[in-house]
Amino acid sequence: MKKQKKRKYNNIISDLDKVISKLNSVNTPIEESIKLFEEGVKLSDEAEKEIFEIEKNIEKIKKMKIKSAEKVDIEKSLNEVDVIIENLEDEEISLEEAEDYYKKANEKILGVEAYLKKAKSIIKKYEQ
Image (cartoon, rainbow, N blue to C red):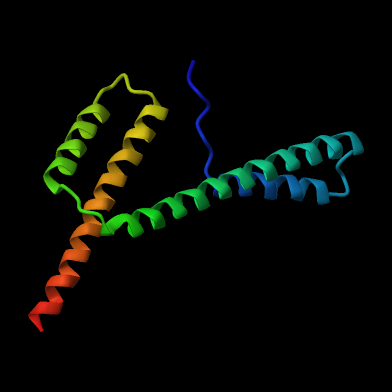
């Protein structure tokens, strides 16, 4: 069974705005207002979770940049990315698996990028 597709923060907020507009309407019956309020609370919780995920991803990227001081085997990392790309080309792959592969590839690529930036800054010191 496939998991329901995760909604984007902007879509959640848009839905929440619609609920708030309906709640602010004088023509909304009390029974519907209660249901709308409950829906609004759920949307608010969903938005909060999405913000938490975004913050968590930002922190992960920051930590990866800090780790950039470590040596990186560029060839090995790029070979691993190639394998990940091959896995992503599988038509039977689930959305969750694709997301995991994407995160792994992104982590490898950012690691190589950070390592190369550090190497470039060291080289520039000696060029001057």
